[in-house]
Length: 310
Image (cartoon, rainbow, N blue to C red):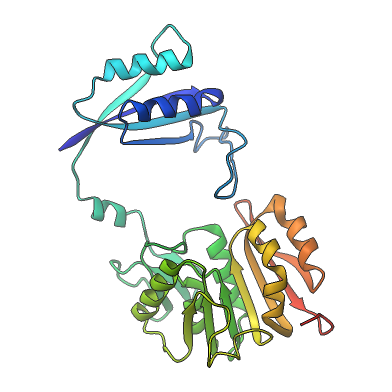
């Protein structure tokens, strides 16, 4: 079995209309990305899920996948019609053949070195350093494989600053990677919270794959659970939340209440352009600072003052 892959460039104003027309014509998928990707002219665009993009790239490359039986000439003519041009656009046509997609996908995920002692390693790879703390984690239903800047920023902070015996709350735990790392790095007890039940399921599975002590690690959709009061409200020594700026702003009072006075908060999922707004909100209870940056994302940290309301 095989498919046709058609690639061409459009201006930013035509992205939506061209994409819609391709889907109407039976496209199996439409991929849109910066035509200048990987060059000095690459144009970074950032945004949050659920928010419509304010703009597309000045020159956008579209790659569309069709069944092999499609009439490519008719597709190209339809694209030109939507773009309002008389000449057919330049395009590249390739044939996509059936492959071992599982193996191909796995090849895209290599071990990630966080530090000299901490690695994130997919299950199908050998351990690069068997003596290190190796987090076995595969791509799955929930966010968090260690490949994204925000996850790496949080892992690096935990690796450097987590103290043995800390009690940790990972709010918005996703795959559970930060909670599992905290436990492996010496935390006494860890609670991971996520509103998505699929994330909780994935986190439990990842914890089992990493041989975590179930008496010290809990994943739940509720912030407080019976028997875990020392990680619930007013009790954690560390709260880490790798979400997004807007949810973090809304959650500020909740995360503040989850920390002991003197406890440390670690926030990521925040763009550099959003940092000041998040710092302003959390500064009511914390002495906040930008602790690290990576590819346009920042890590914010702070310590809860003794006078903060509980």
